[in-house]
Amino acid sequence: MAIKFDPVNLMDSMVGSGHGISASDVSRHAGQAKEAVKNFHKLVDEGKYGFPHLPFQTKEHKSYLDFAASVRGSFDTVCVVGIGGSALGAWALDCGLRGPHPVQAAFSPKNPRLVILDNVDPDFIGGALASMNPKKTLVAVIAKSGATAETVAAFLIVREWLAQKLGANKAAQRIVAVTSAGTGDLKVLATKEGYQTFHLPDNVGGRFSVLSAVGLVPAALCGFDIRKLCKGAAAMTALSWKEDLAANLAANAALHQWLSLTQRAKTIQVAFPYVNRLWGTAFWFRQLWAESLGKKYDRQGNTVHVGQTPIAALGTTDQHSQVQLYMEGPNDKAFTFWTVRKPADPGRIPKTKTGLEAMDYLPGQTLAKLLDAEQRATAAALTEAQRPNSTFTLDRMDAEHLGAFLQLLEFETAFAGELLGIDAFDQPGVELGKRFTFALMGRKGFGEYGDRFKADEKLRQNR
Figure 1 (cartoon, rainbow, N blue to C red):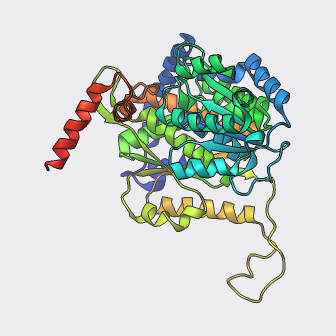
Figure 2 (tube, rainbow, N blue to C red; figure 1 turned 180 degrees about the vertical axis):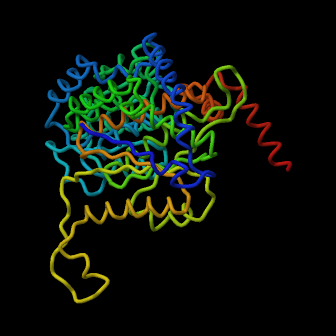
Figure 3 (spheres, rainbow, N blue to C red; figure 1 turned 45 degrees about the vertical axis):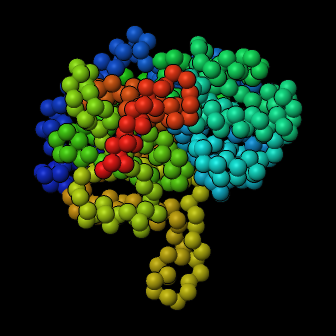
């Protein structure tokens, strides 16, 4: 497994002193990055946060694989019902290991497809159900508490769909639940109806759960090598505890992003994969970075309103839709390119020439070379325009590298939270909207929020 981090184009020597960080900045604050590693290590050792332990839970991994083997061949579709971290991790793994839809191989019991229901748009849910055969569908409902309105609503529809086609008893045998081992309504229902159940550790939040049952159960059901995913993640975990920042990619990247944010006001980070298989990872990272680092208060209770807004862009596609803004718009962004050094297939361009100047320089070359040239050209253009950028390079796109990269990004996020002095593992900012939703949908115990919503509506109507 080999992943490299290149921060050179973040430096003032490349993009100017007004936008780049200096070598003295990095040197002066390296001790803080090392302290962030120590502080987070202490919290993990105390049991407060658990994602670093996930790659080493071999007993649990075996249980996922044993279950997948026991049902293999009986379904051609895995339907995940979840939202946020309960869905994006499964998508990142599926996209990374098989490629994005719709270019995956035809689905079959030997190659089951993944369908993710992560929204409650009725047309979306209805279309998804119409595309699946209930007799050949295995449903994985994923929710830590089992109280997320969107997941519950979609699951109740899917559960009824299965029961109408198969009968209640057979439907229950086609449902897998991933939820908390403790209290929670999904756990209660799963026990009552006899679903196969796997548990999410209490000290692992949804957006950090990709290498728990949340991501690994769907991955095992789809036939992915989850042991290699975890092998790569375990190797990255060992690196992420090192004090040497040259070896600790996660701490080094966190330090550079923190300096770009706090010293140069780069309040937006563009995650810019130049490989379609990392497109799902970019959306997974968007939640990870935004929900972890966007906070009103620091750990001392001071109001800070801190955070760096993540944006997902795809190379080369978004060179033709966003780079104009990136080159000439507000200089408030840091760009992070994600590249793969050795694609599985270089994509040879036919040698036949057309006699046309705009085409005849390409025959005999490869798509891999063109993609690499596009990425390096975009980085160079941004650098000339004083737009700071860095690059992560994976040696190849396989399970081991993907597992390592996901773990790297989780550690980078945790270390960035330590540097910012905030709790990267809570999400109080999303709770009020949830409570208003519960009130509007008539859930008991949320009348106060219904009254507040009505007051807000009355104020809005009187404006």
